[in-house]
Image (cartoon, rainbow, N blue to C red; front, top):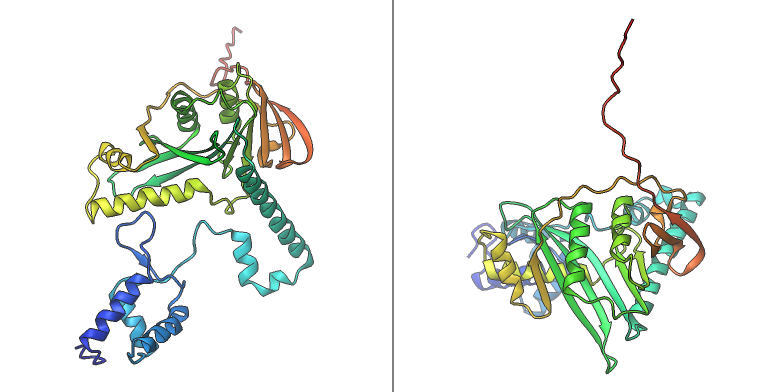
Length: 349
């Protein structure tokens, strides 16, 4: 029995079971738990209802909070995946009263709903010769002594019988996540998965991850000699939780259940644990160390555009939003080589 509040052992065990059942483990960690209802105050009335159904007395909020602290169950703090604009409008009444900011917020909602609608439409109305690819990356550093990056291709196709088929291709490396990592992953993915048969369209969706100049240029060279229609679509930032994100949660769940509090000894062990899962192709990625080309700036500023279609090497057709608005042609040009340092000036006088 708890001497401070005299809680019987049977009731205390039930509170512990209820708290663990309503506090999932944080993705990417081994045993850190967060209350499902975001705060202790919101979870307290739900606890009281569950206790009354079990014929247990409802303890005070102070006692309830102390038990959760002893179990090291945390409240949910700010989530980096949440949209800063949505949080700002939700929590600040003075901002919601300003007309210009309300209009900006309305446009923001319209834009991210439009991108989600186009994404769902492409996914449900996919033809046999079309391919939908979700591209994203994550970092695993809680179970390893070094940071390991995983770049994922979630491929959705339609079979001859009309069913949607899904496969995952994961590429693991300790190399920093930059343009070289992305292009090396795309080169390896082209070898592992045949894209030539998707002549009606290849639709790539990501969270604003492939819109850098040198990465875009290198990506266009991969499809230079092939008659393929490749479209790059981007979700609005912080509103693009796709199949790749749920796939990362599965990987981290596999690691938690397999390790049971231990640490990974190597990247090879990580690959062996994840490779046991069906429909997951995971491989160690060797990075191409060749220097990336220096590209001149965008002439039409398509960096923030949400649809970019590759038409030729270094040539793109962009739209502000997916399948909406006028199209703009953009051409990327490699900068001429300039020697570093100042030229030496000789005075012969």
